[in-house]
Image 1 (tube, rainbow, N blue to C red):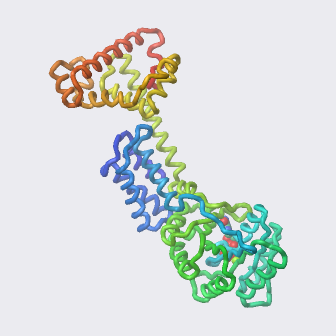
Image 2: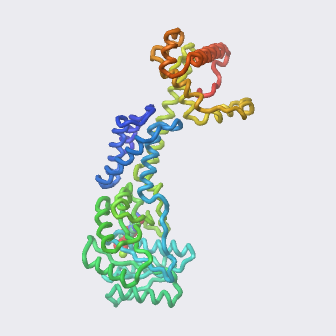
Image 3: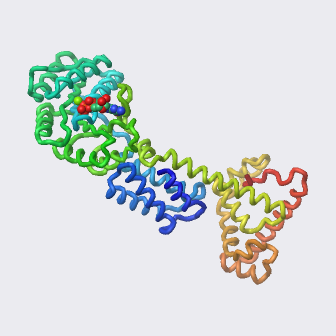
Length: 435
Ligand code: GDP
Ligand code: MG
């Protein structure tokens, strides 16, 4: 996956502008990466179309390469889509009632234990409720978890009515001054009417403050359909994504959020009870795209490029072959590093001198325009630029002759200086912008 993306970003490396053409391959690869991460194809397509629109409308600012910019846009949009900011979790009732629903094996009981542990650490006093009436083992499982985190578990082994158990548990909570009630329900292997009706009945009987839909992130594409079915019946308030410790990239998070438009509130990544975390869209975005890899790759590629470029330039300066194209490249390098005045201020002795001088990056724009109006031949043969060529360059760049002449003169002086430095024993020292 990351190899493919590396390839895609290679297409962008060194390009100054994001265009329909140079973005096409990247968009395709991002879409493939999403599908690889279990994002539904239709959603992946809609997402990348949106990213493309944003990218095309974005100017490549000098500080980043188009590849880096694309990386950022994709990551930001992904995070945006999955929630933007953290969502709230309502535990203000007395007691606050939290209903846990989901398929069998999704991790409901484990999550209930983790949530109890989490809330306890926040100073709440929770009560766990075993409302899975079909498997006696389910009650035992919750008892064990409750014991591990030191939270009481309410159960009625003989009662086969989950609604009653839930109602009795809330009474018990009031009597015992528990301020959060976590109801762990039964699940089935697939969406099924009996299960849905039962959970829906509990919902109408206890009127929960939060209904959390628990889903196994490893189930990939299926997770979307399950989420849809549960949402239609329960109108849940949030999603819990479990088993993120597996090798899934978590594309389900994106698909579910996109499809049911409910926030993901918690993520669970392990069987241990302290492996519960609130959901951070940023982190999930990084995970879905394997962004850690991508960002480093893009940066590495860029650094390599810069290094090769610096060596090439050094050689040219040694041979007194520094030309306009090199100058333009350097200008762009400097701009990439940041604001011109800040950069100059870092040169010893210069900072103070230019404190009150107004140096705008616009000053460079004129020079850029002049060089860009030169033919490739002129750029690499500064000495061949005669009067008639100068006139044409002035016209092309919209500058007048005095400006063109002034720049040519400055350029000559710079080359003379380079020649002098070449004669010094240490070769060319550290000039600003040379790395
Ligand atoms: P339930 O049927 O929905 O109540 O699911 P359980 O809580 O019983 O979990 C089913 C299985 O998944 C158990 O073996 C759990 O230990 C395991 N499990 C639950 N959450 C996680 C998790 O975040 N990571 C991993 N690796 N396993 C989990
Ligand atoms: Mg269970």
